[in-house]
Image (cartoon, rainbow, N blue to C red):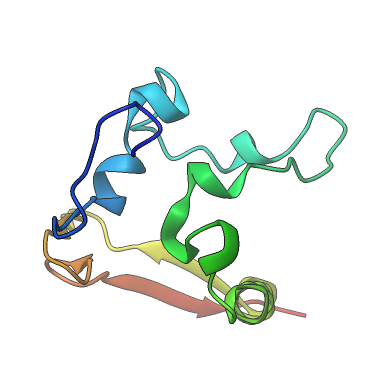
Amino acid sequence: MLPSGHHVSSNAKVLYSLYAMGRSEEIWGPDCLEFKPERWISKGGDILHVPSHKFIAYSVGPRSCLGKDMSLIEMKIVASAILWNYHIKVVQGHVVSPNLSIALFMRHGLKVQITKREM
């Protein structure tokens, strides 16, 4: 039984699109298509908690990904090291678009210009 009340038979396959859910106005609000990192930061500068069921890449509940916490820590360490040491700018005119498939990746890659920060 789905949360909506729809019955799903035991031999049915259920597929969902993380890409579509990440851009759903019903889940994220009217500005769902905008890149807004501040949506996860409070007015006081603290990190806002977003329930796991709103971003289910790692699943939720008893079948939650065992490596979720470690992967998030690694991502934060790598991102902070890169941003601390380099300026990163998307190449002007480069089209950023997804290649829709089971494993979501960028259709044309992400062409950026990287310059070392002066310390």
